[in-house]
Image (cartoon, rainbow, N blue to C red; front, side, top):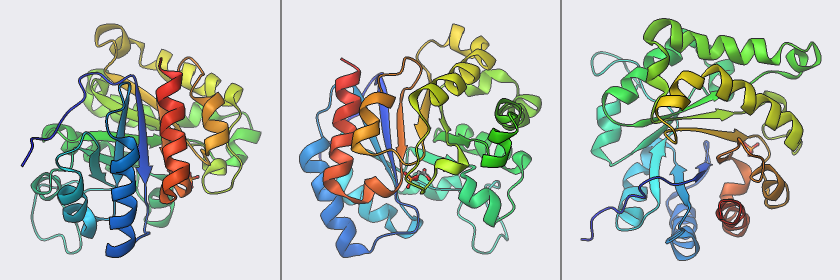
Length: 262
Ligand code: PGA
């Protein structure tokens, strides 16, 4: 078996969030299509975050490629009597290198507090799994002009508990909740303003660990808007839901990232 190939410092990331979609047969076709068209990209790290039961399948199909895989959540504890939870060590058993944390679909449906998410963030870091922290505002918050306040508070939940340095070697995905699954992505200007805010807030980390903090955009990314969004200076790629389930659309998005990084 060939060893897992790791890209040293990819300029861009494109991360598929499959959410609760797929089955063994469909996944196999989709992963094989990813492998066919998306291996060997120079500037872009492709990651696919699958439902837990399919981690083994992702591992078996992707392990000898440069496409990485991960999960969409983890438990805040290492092990113990937590029925239905999945620990970071279990993710590691299946070679997962990334985990999405704090996605708004979880935060609202399962009442995840910012503090809970902060604990999960540290648990992932402790075991070398890269957290992909989702932050973002609702439409009401945007209309009220308090979007930076909201995102700032989500970041502060981690900074207050663990300090700013923990953001080194992590990924943040700015996902305006009103843009997720709606077909209505943020405009490049809206995304640019928020990415600038996040980067400035975390400037202490950015200054010391130059390329180690990636800030992605998520929310109705498609092959068309990806071209413009990925050209924005502070946008390091995208977290892609719906379009990641379509091999051709996901390929086009990854190629948009690759081109934007040249
Ligand atoms: P979407 O999902 O691309 O379907 O809007 C993005 C996400 O929820 O991460």
